[in-house]
Image (cartoon, rainbow, N blue to C red):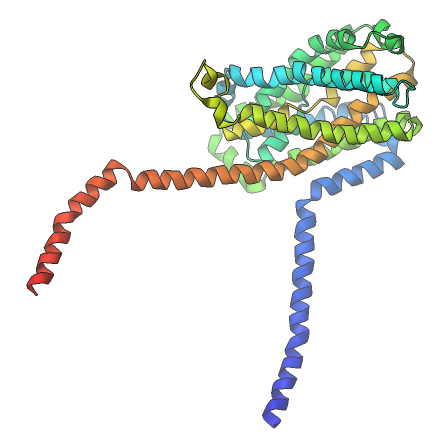
Length: 429
């Protein structure tokens, strides 16, 4: 009896310690989960700060974000890219014409055509104008601007994709964008009286061109060249420092500054607050649906079904699959749009239009470019898992090929006489 009582006492003493271990494990799991979602949490904090203190990070605000963030944060992203990407890899992708065609045609032709079709459907189904026409004009403009510079490289690298391919594509797109976007937008605007303010107004774009190319040179190309020179001069030291201190993580932190600046400018103009509830809900949910659909289309175009790869009528060369790493780059570069080029171009194109109308027109650009970062955060994990599965399948196939290789067959044949000798010796015994 005493022995049983002693066992009960010991079990009661162990029970609180087990509960403590369980609570500690739960707390540790929650902390790890929150740390993995730090980018989304940071975006939420940036939005709250932008709402209550919009004058801090707006364009022309206290910290002059058009210089401190737009130049500084982007320069850090491209400097880290230059330090981490081999120069030969950049040169290889510079000559990758199939990748250029896939990304640029998708960005400048397919997306505008799709958005224009949606705009005409809305015009046909909304004759009373519940959805603000400034938003529709803003969506056509958003569809015509090039892919974003900063987040594409960061997200591609985080998902295990080819960040060199992403970097080359965003540079090409942002060189083409200023020449394509303005004329393409005015051409695609619906030919109705509702869109006359945007079709007839044409501002002087010369200053905008100077600003855009100065920004592209100072915040993207110059840091990239400096990073490449440092990597060329001290390759081993650079690689060791990048791996030890995880310098590439700085790019993700810089994205939060870009989101803070974007929402600060949006709240400072008061454009969001004056839109109808129907218009705001339309913009938010349409952005989500559009980005997910465009990403799925990019994935299918990059990795078409095997049935289309049959060698008939030249279909294999047309529907040839690109590598998984390049596919990830296309999935982030294709659907994304740039607020860094979009907003200056919008205000330069429609300079004669009143400020309130321009602010409402900019809402699709601001919200789409912000929502794309949030949604892309989830695609990073999805594409990362897909990429890991592809790599595991490759490893299994390579092991199988190694086992079934001719060298292994010769090796097994060479072992046969000794095995037979062992069998004969055992028989004699």
